[in-house]
Amino acid sequence: MPKPVVAIVGRPNVGKSTIFNRIVGERIAIVEDKPGVTRDRIYGNGEWLNHEFHLIDTGGIEMTDEPLLTQMRYQAELAIEEADVIIFVVNGRDGITGADEEVSQLLFRSKKPIVLGVNKMDDPTLHEKMYEFYSLGIGDPVAISGSHGLGLGDLLDEVTGRFGNIAEDDYDDDTVRISLIGRPNVGKSSLVNAMLGEERVIVSDIPGTTRDAIDTPFERDGKDYVIIDTAGMRKKGKVYETTEKYSVIRAMRAIERSDVVLMVINAEEGLIEQDKRIAGYAHEEGRAVIIVVNKWDVLEKDDKTMRDFEQKIRDEFLFMDYAPILFVSAKTKQRLHKVLPLVEEVSESHNQRVPTNVLNDLIVDAVTMNPTPTDHGGRRLRINYATQVAVAPPTFVLFVNDPELLHFSYRRYLENKIRDTFDFMGTPIRIYARKKND
Image 1 (cartoon, rainbow, N blue to C red):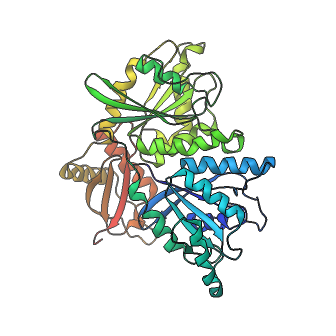
Image 2 (image 1 turned 180 degrees about the vertical axis):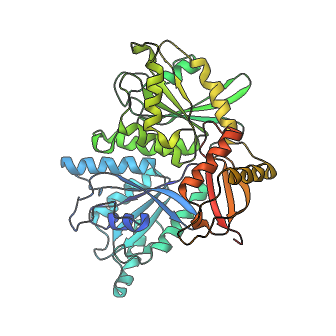
Image 3 (image 1 turned 135 degrees about the vertical axis):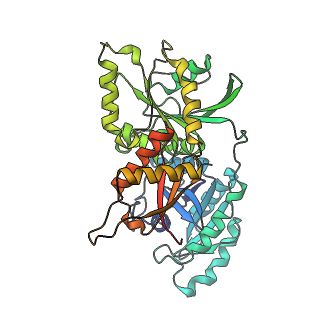
């Protein structure tokens, strides 16, 4: 299930960025006591009482024809359109301003759930001013202080309480959800059209043609699939169009909704650092991944070209060595017939369960071949028991005498042993250590 999106909006200089930093727990947004400092939307991740969500900080909305402020308003409107819940921030010290009333009218038209946060209410004598904010017609205002962290729990209670109204997709559980991710102009939309055999998605040589995530359900050989084509994710410092920055969070949500991710690379351009960053999103979300090298027909090749390209991918994507690599051409349909069978295979790996007794036999054999590590004091890691606690991705828990003794290198060794025995092609594996009595 994708994480809900929460947008913080309001006129300039009401403390939106301070509240954003408090919620995400990091100083991501620039905070300065000067209107208009946050000129773009900034994304972060928040969590409150086991509810995870994306958080968008926006530039202040101000109804004016001045170019910068018009652009800031446009950015905020895009964030409002994307949001599931909106936090409308006003300045309690100033009272209601004409700009606040204009913003409230904009929010009314969005028809989105809205939580009204009255900021800078750290002075108790100001609390009687709260009542005037009822006239905005937003609902019960919540008194907060972003700079001191006061009232933010009450605010987030109101926000997460509105998550229950967010619609989920209505696909069956056995429908395989596939998302295509990658930089702009790597041929994602062309791949979708070639796989479906029809022109379902706009195709253009202009980078960034696909603005939204597009769901395309289809059936093949009695199996139901949904392809989610996403706008290309560009490197943060090189995104100039506001609509492309807006597309990043949609791509993230597409990854969260998918079972299998096709990480598309442009064979003509080769690998760049941004490819690793994009693939990292899918890896961190625990999705099954297939690396698809598109436009393979464009390259002049010899008998070593594919092997060398594959080795370069393996060298650059060390964290994703489980992902199979497929060299295709959307234009000539070269090897496209292999995509869906491979999707089905990695989807099965993603949902594979290992019987507990077989898993423990494997762990015993692995420890026999390579004894567990010791710390500087001579204490040795002892694995008492192992069990698989989840699928998608496969997740294993080792009950040990001390979790601190499970070194990264030994965790990796055990993962390799599990993979050697049960394959798990295309899917990450999670291994956690717990103290025996936990």
